[in-house]
Length: 395
Image: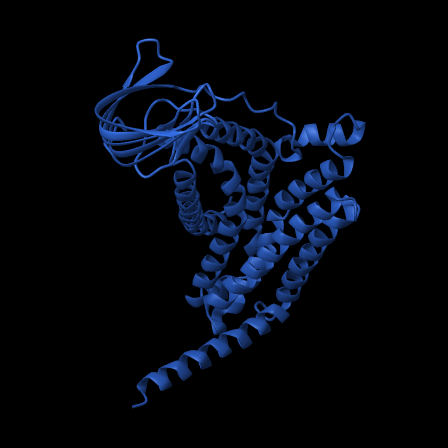
């Protein structure tokens, strides 16, 4: 690589890593909060959430990589344009194609990474995520009672407590509803309770204090028992059966498995769904080499209109491409449109836009239809800011 290539790549590296890292962390944190809320009844929720978060990384990496790469290129090219470095390179005989060449090579390397992520890491991590979530949701009751959580370890037992210590063993204001072996309802409340595991490891013993128990006798009449201390034994429940084998969903299959099952028809999944998933992954991976063709002209066109409009226009195009691919996969899975057309049409349209913008900008860098739209958008945003400032300054 020449000195210019190394310089351009070094400029783009850290903005791309920073944008990808910030976005990845933000998405993971949002998902972790939802998982903590979902698994609040599990005493080992932090262990489960950590495993789930690790298995979510390939999924969010596939989402953030194209966006971070595109945003980094727009920022870097715009920064070079604002400091007139691009003008100096063009004046020295470096064409726009030569300027974009190192970024196209970087895009080719990222395409290989995306094929690895989309084709192999995501299917296995998706299945692992579902397996861990299935285990967490069906882990059974381990004898601990978290505060302000309604536990239903079985259809015959419901428990809740207003307060509990960190270990979930010292409880205050506890409520227990149980259906006995004879099918009679039994409701117990107590001011205090302590949970201790039995020696057999299959039951827990509740030592209740200052409470009452409502139960029904053989004649069906209610009876109320008030007690100072009362001991109750409850069974712990084991985990439910394991999740099905991998491959019940086309998103859990690797690229090779998708291609093989779509060709042979040996899967219980429809061939259209398999092809739609296969072409969708390939379209997302091979869209990366198109991003420099779009980002470099947008970065050049941002000299007059500012950086924000270029990022907005590019973001809209990337978002539209992502959702159109998803729509195409859905239409293909339902058999309404062939997978080749449903996924190929958005990819070809995105490729046509990127190529048109790049080759239009070769003669006059920055002078593209999108660049003109960015100028209008930037002028509109400037007018809105001026109008807001004028309104704020008015008495």
